[in-house]
Length: 356
Image 1: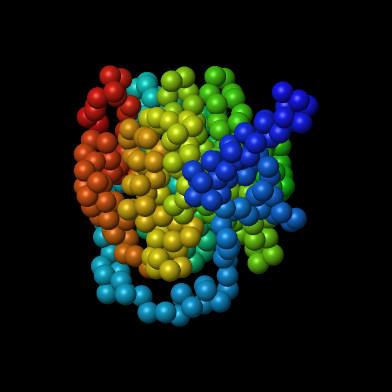
Image 2 (image 1 turned 90 degrees about the vertical axis):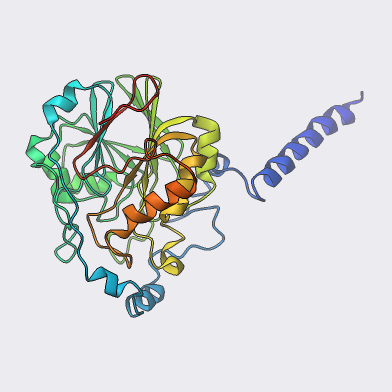
């Protein structure tokens, strides 16, 4: 084989590989390849590079939604009551690996004797968006938190008062662009910023930051200036995936293929109506169940329901629609528990179901 052939053959195989990967992923590179190439970086800020068009915070679309009739208006007049239980902190601390739903995107993960908190929100979002369900315990009664995971900077996921109450003790793992916010809100806090597909290991637990299909905004002038994403927590042979907010996208199947199976997927099941406005960046329960299956997860822990009235659907629709979606997919209730606010779910040691 001559020099020309020695150059041409590997090149031809490289082209074949790229074409195969492109076809296999519906005409686009896989999510990790895009992330590694920094395709989500733009000057300034970030984007979802697999989307043909972004529409985050579009004022005209927002006004259209706000001035449109809500087809669920009659149902929303009925205000359901959700039961809240107070977590037994001492018992949870001694009970092995567990997940406690504290409301909205705030969950307490107890893994390898470490206390991990996601997107802590202890009070109201703003003065005009109050809590429908109270925080299940006084925040001062929480155990010492070693790690706090932030998925993105929207007000219902990143709250200054809650962060200040936690103080500078925990390690805060945050998406790119959030360090300056922490420097203003909690000077001296231990903050590690991560880009998509980067990871950070602390005391044997690895926190891998993965893309979601979402966006960020805190002021009229900072749309998508900070990154967003989800967290895969790997503690020994245990894997827990916390999604934050996301529309349904190919990333879930990619994560299931690359990192699965996942022991527990903590996925949002609320804030999804009207679909014409919300679907790009928020899953409905049917899509959340698809994401759960894509992730090759064993257990589904629904989150973000029953706390803040942010969109058109009635407050009791998300848990009802979630249960219906799980049943239609023939997922047993043992794998798809609906935790009360403050309730704890424990991992079964023998991979079977352990009653709570």
